[in-house]
Amino acid sequence: MVQSVSASVRLKVPFYDVDIMQIVWNGHYLKYFEVARQALFSECGLDLGRYLEEKKYAFPVIRSTVKHIRPLRLGDEFICTALLKEARIKIVLDFEIKLTANGQLCAKGQSEQAALLLPEMEMAFKIPEEIQKALYGKQ
Image (cartoon, rainbow, N blue to C red; front, top):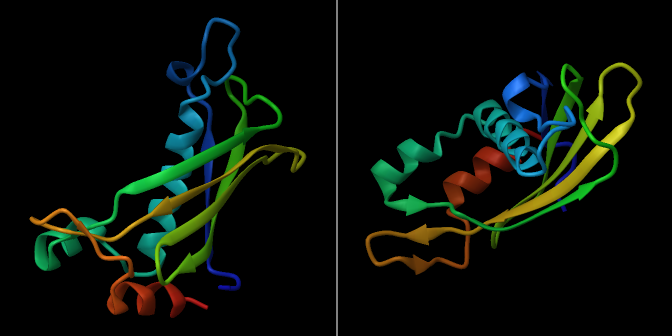
């Protein structure tokens, strides 16, 4: 298990993410998770788009979950954190969203990404060594 490999982003709920009741539509939580995921990868020096072009590996999300605890509302400021759990067989990240005002937990979730070799579209069943080193090297 990986320890302390994480990244956090501070965000504010915009008007276009809310419904008529001025609460965030459930699908936008995955978008917030993606922003935190990209921050974690960036802090580790990873550009998976470039890796796809150069090495022909894609890293699609193969599973994601969200547990909604307290709704985010229009104008809420929050912190979304991505925490690396595993990066050997697949990349597993845990997420949490907390209000900045009081630290109240609003949502938590997890995603899994697999390594896919192109153009064959074959599952690699292992994360390439370069990616592992980049992710685990942040410890």
